[in-house]
Image 1: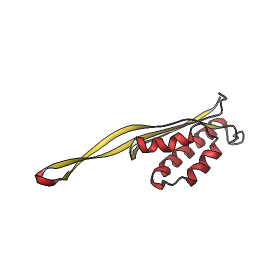
Image 2 (image 1 turned 90 degrees about the vertical axis):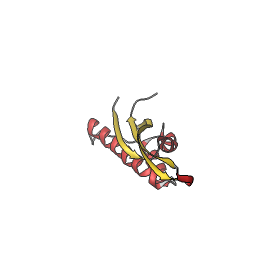
Image 3 (image 1 turned 180 degrees about the vertical axis):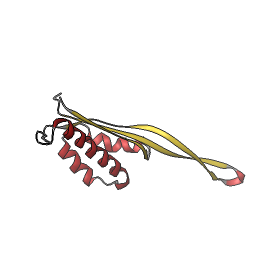
Image 4 (image 1 turned 120 degrees about the vertical axis):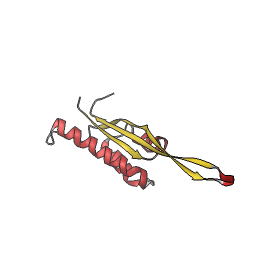
Length: 117
């Protein structure tokens, strides 16, 4: 059993939005997952996910050796987005008040493995 793991930390965007994309990738072969990411309609969200997936594949290649690596055997076993820190900013509101604006960050984790389940 060989696995490659990649984590992108402090990525701008909420974990809830990244989870929508990562839910599509779970359980797919890596070739299929890369193709799906290319055609998804959210470019601002899919770019960090694509970068993390390619990093996980490269980590698996490094562990097993590039000559022995077969992309058809590997699947996306785990793909999740966890909440990161939140920047709190304030914006002027009517009647002299202020409303808080939350700028959210996420941590994206993708695990690629060749194990059979």
